[in-house]
Image 1 (cartoon, rainbow, N blue to C red):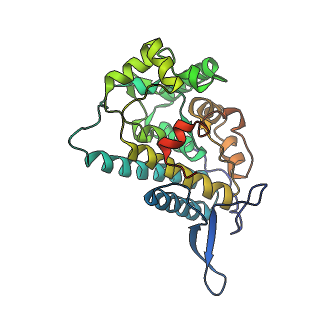
Image 2 (cartoon, rainbow, N blue to C red):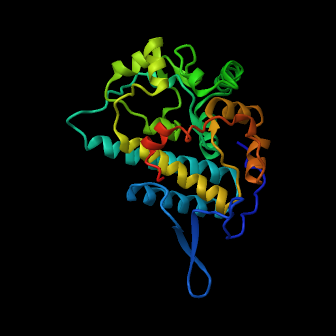
Image 3 (spheres, one colour):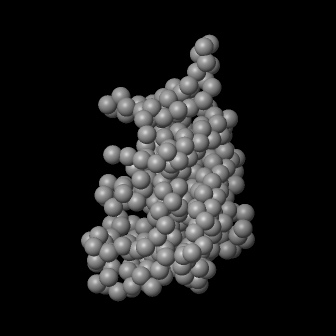
Length: 296
């Protein structure tokens, strides 16, 4: 992977939206020196989620504050992935009476749209470069392009289909498990049979999409993923001036593999090379807001 040119970090200010709002506050000492970050109001109902979001934002600000480089952005993606898994695994380990039904080879949840952030895209691509031979990587790229050609522009509802597996699903197993997205790390189920029916039975799938049935799960892993993602988005947008609107995994990876040299440098320079991969944001869905624990 080419290191590319180092982009200058943004000044230590807070970028606000059109209404002048910002969630992050830079704390300063009596001499005006930045000493940390704080939230000016809660993002989530649960205190622990706000603490996770703030810790993630602080890590993101520190990593990219050292320079807007592809290496730092990919490292940030890996850090967020590891942090999400640590919280999710810890939560599931504390529930021995009813363990999750998720197992290797159980891939019912791997047939839907997946939202990601740019640091996740860079971490996944770095993982592919480090673990595939040139011939294997070429095969992955061809498969990604074919999958994107088939799914680009589809709604989240249409993407929930047994005919549309994740392009990284190989023999019912995740081929990038070590670098899987944050949302995948938070996903869990207490009943694999419900997951299978929701995916493969048209009536059950329609009921799920309509919100009349749901998959039983533990909330803490899901809320961990949302908290980490929120922290990433806040720091990258408000403190680093980078574009972080949610992306759809397949489309975003297609953009990355089609131009792995230029795309990271454009994004790190404050441009928006992933604009065509929008579609990973379903936070407006009331069910998602409830699951995520977002404050009203």
